[in-house]
Length: 589
Image (cartoon, rainbow, N blue to C red; front, side, top):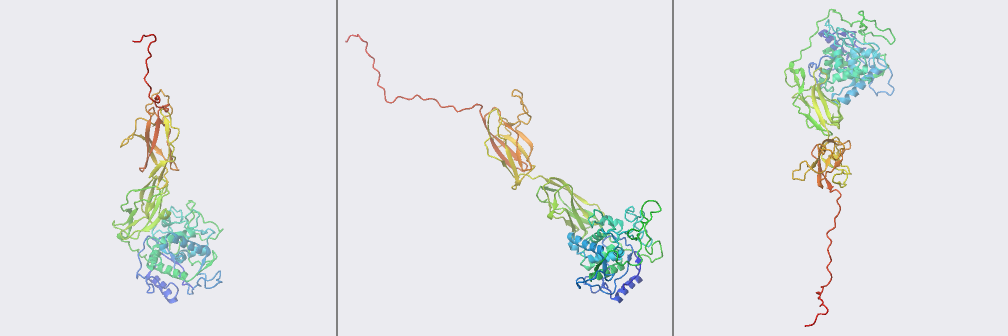
């Protein structure tokens, strides 16, 4: 039989006598879980209760003190025909057990170093709500009626004024612990999870609540395979030594073995108060007398309402040197990168305590936000790391995607309602380290006409297409230091005009604001030749400094080949001198 105490204890109402009874019951019975963190059997024992890391998830609300039975449940696998039902104490309702195991797997996927065992969730679920009132949940894992702790109005319990306007607990004056894992609304606002993928974070859903509890227990630098860290995690849930011993007992008990039982058949500890505690189909809770439409919370748990009880033991104050005051930029420089490249600068954050000094082992989550495809190494949009001894932590390498523009990286202390640190990052388009023509056609025309062929170029960066690269095109001189030419080919980017019209402002020889397309290519506007014949040069320069020079040839209008002068051939041989004939009839001397 279980050691039944039959009631829940208030915050701080665990007197020395009650604690002694609990320990004596364990020791006398030999029940599982008698070995605590302070016991000699635990090599990790600290010898004292560690201080809590955070405020209690439950607001230190009451819990069940029932201890495990003397008998040990069968370990899984000890029989090929394990019974569907067995010891009511070792059996866990099907949906509840599934939620714990799913939470363990989910946390292992994102924080494997925590080593969260599902049996710890089961132990806390047993102590907090009797496994969701013995598994009284619907097909989605939501309790048929709310499970509510007592009003936390300072009368025998903590004083926590309303933080959710009654959204979760139906009380707009004070908070109450809610759901199978008994989160107070303010803690749920930070740690709430969607464990069943329905798009909601509902503390009354066992899948959501179990995952939230798992992440809460893993906060900070905890490794739950280490006894001291496990103790700190449990105490952060409800800061009470007796609570720790009770959870430890059930944890060890469930590690020895358990089995699945049908939903709704689990054992509910006696004295379960709070909530409406109704079966499916039973009448809904009565509306509140105020007419607000919110259900009136069920009966308070034992001891609520100012009954006489021992003075609550105060929670030890946390020293300023151990209290997180916030996170700040630890000297991160400008974050700029080219598309596809890694950011050279690494984001660095520093956690500080209330004295302004460094605080180690603070969990910091870095998140890439905004319209960007940039991500941390491995394609992760969010990464959680812990600060070192100097209080700083450096995010993984951030890599730019293909999308140019600005975005933000936020760093926040995980699980704390403290301001985030924002880092503005900029991704610029790929530059080009090479640009070349897409063909090798000669570019020739007559003076006063346009070039028939269009100039097309392609830009690349490290061999890959360079899209969206800025290009400048200039008609240049042939000097040692070329400048814009004032004659020869030009761009007419003003539209057609008449020959006899003043062309001032229309003979443009430099074009800017050109950009390569998605395939890295660029086609220039039409090129015209003025009346001056000759060979000219067109230079294209990209953002990034890549350059190509293209030759343009302008021929004289109507130019044709002119043959050389005709030479008169000389007669072959040497001619004899002519003889003058004597006139006839001239007497001889």
